[in-house]
Length: 472
Ligand code: G6P
Image (cartoon, rainbow, N blue to C red):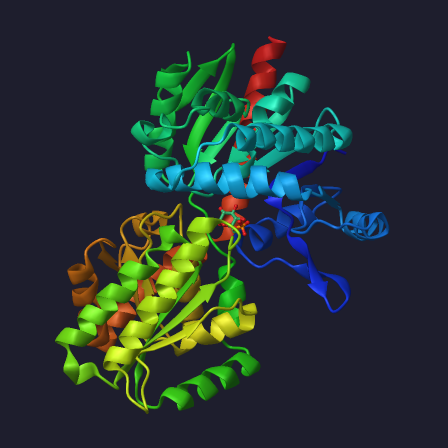
């Protein structure tokens, strides 16, 4: 029986430090939950990094077999690989360029070489697992070379690739010194998936300009093979959020939180620490809102959760300092002994707490400068079982193509965000419900299971057509 090998930088279970030792913990996040149903089938397995480097070979053996029992195959990166591949090339070149922030990019030949080396290590692990009829589904920007590396070793393999972050305009992409190698790596896939039509369009324009690829609409001819490039907007596990939102423990927690804030309206902001998320601009817009709307003082709190992320990368550490300062300034300027305008938390939370926050919030403020999809916006919608609540959403998030009943804002325009806040806080309940209802229909229909099935079915269809054409 053939199997599917899922490959992503992170495994859906991570090894965390606990007391004097280590323990396994499920990774939260879209990818882990989204692919869980595929991973659960048959003998499918998943290759990725469990998030730590274990110094002790005994620990490494122990955790390797504990993970393998769950059909998870770990790749342990050493410190140098973490620095060069993960922090350096993935998060200091690809992440900023793909999010339209070229000024943050740091080009370093050694980091590039480590990126190549780690992609080759992933290839070797896959080759040790793969059988001729298997399907290999590779995820995200950390592994752009992998489709090409596998294709060279297994010319007939069925290879899908999905990118979870935006693909930039060719004018940005061409800045990368190793742009051609990256494209050639991606073009090793049979099917390349992106969240939006714009990402597809950008990829095709880079591929046709920078490599000798022929373009026939969204089909690219590469070395006698056809590569399909298509949009698959990712969804979330909507039923999970709906169920959590009617769970009695979650509801108790919502009541507790609400009691704490009395009659105040709550604006919620939740992101990983990242400069692509527009956290500083969001704070500036909130400060402007407070300046111009004294009637809302003590009547509203911005509940801001920033989840620690990549804090070994200098730009992220710097951003953390800037956020700390700005929150401090706003609270010092507008706050009083009985009211802090910004309730700020720098923590990760279990999903039940996040569901409680989604339910407590009158408004969810999601204003990334650029985002492949943005799953927080969809989780908020799925959590609002009573159809109240207002979503303010950046037009730069992939989700804005689907959630058209949100209040759509330009994240660079603090005046626009200020107006949206005022509008949201005054929105009559029937309007809220009308908007929420139509967004819920989308989020529940196009959920993550739908996304994964659609991608896998399409890949299978492409391979079937290829093999019948070959057989003729
Ligand atoms: C984004 C990326 C993922 C990544 C996640 C968390 O969603 O698309 O590939 O895993 O951020 O970032 P981290 O660097 O902690 O893996």
